[in-house]
Structures are given as C-alpha cells and as structure tokens.
Length: 175
Image (cartoon, rainbow, N blue to C red; front, side):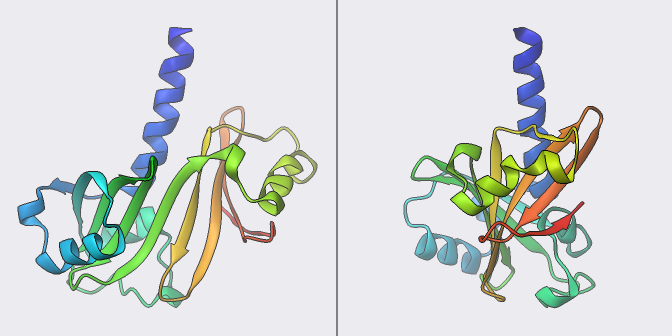
C-alpha cells in the first residue's frame, strides 16, 4: 500500500515537473502586470505560487512551437503561476507584460469530454499494451491561437507516451 502511494505521488510530481520548469519566486518578485492579469482572469485563485522561467526553458513545460509566436530566443522571462480555482489545479503562463499565453487545467480523467474519453478508452487498439497511468489529465489552452487540447499520459511498462487530443477526440500529437 505504501509503495502504491509513493508511486502515485511520483506520477503526480512528474506531471507537475513537466509544467513548472523555472525557479520559485515570491509575489513581490513577480511583475505587477502579471499579478494584475492573474487577479483579473482568475479572481478566486487560491494557494498561488509564482515561478520565473528563463526564455529557453519555457518550451519544455508548455509545448511552445513556432506557430505559438512565443519566441524562446528572446531575452524575456516568462512566469508560470500555479494556483487552485474552484477546487481544480491550474497553471498559467504569462509573459513579462502580463499577457496570458497559455493555461493548463489539471483534472481527473473521469471528467474528460466524451469524445476524448472514448478515444482514450480505445487507446489499446492503436497502442497495444498502453494504459493511462495518471489519474489526471491536462486541458491546455493557447490563448493567442484560441486552441485547446487534452494531454494524457499512457504507459506500457517502462515506455511512456504523452498523447495530445483535440476536443473532438482526434489524436493530434504524441511525445
């Protein structure tokens, strides 16, 4: 039982590590523009934690691509804000000017939209032996592109895949 709890803890921590790749900072060390934008978009945010992310590290936890128009070569830091809102865990990526670029909502896999849930359930036909290993998934939103997708982690023993689904259940990417 203790080993199972440790394994679950490890899986949750490794999921969070994929999002938060920067250095923890205080609210006072966070630009006022970022704090104001957070309070405007998420006025009920609780248990807020702030992280400063160097430009070259932002792409690691946020799937930043050329089409996102978030130049990782700029000398501008990003800020990940981790918080709870309505009993759900959120992560938000802001630029130094307080622009919300992306967010991730962590939720239980039982709450996946029906098309995504059905696609995950049929995972074994495309990836024999693979099963969803985490109890949670991420709903990712790219605000500049007005796109969203669902990120689910599946495993086949020691091999792990992160699968990205569109809201209609189509597998759009795997890593």
